[in-house]
Amino acid sequence: MTGKTGTATTVVTDKNTAKSVKSGSLDVFATPMMVALMEEAACNALEGKLEPGQTSVGTEVNIQHIAASPVGASITATAEITQAEGRKISFALRACEGEKEIGSGTHMRFIVDAQKFMQKLN
Image 1 (cartoon, rainbow, N blue to C red):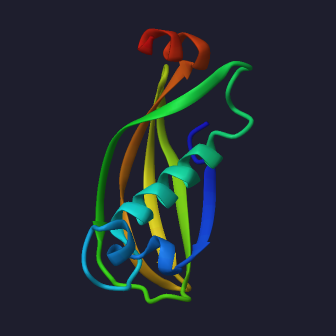
Image 2 (cartoon, rainbow, N blue to C red; image 1 turned 30 degrees about the horizontal axis):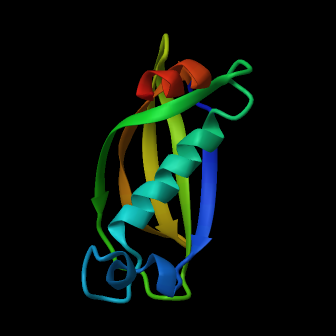
């Protein structure tokens, strides 16, 4: 599983700006939305690797958002599996606007049985 990558892409719109999601006051790509895009990429890296009935849940995110992106910009996140220890999967994350890196970091997910996980909440 190590080395497998997943990607996710979005366009910055009025709906995913810092001003819109209340993580700031500017019309630029919001940090929480970048994190969500990175998590989507991590989920995509696991596609086809889980058993029926399994899913993954995010447990840790450590990122830096180093450059702003305006409305209209296309953002692509990439997640690479760096380690797989039983149910614990670690990822290296990167988000780019074109060739320009706007964010990077690490992420951890755990593989769980979806039904059992949801039953614990009830």
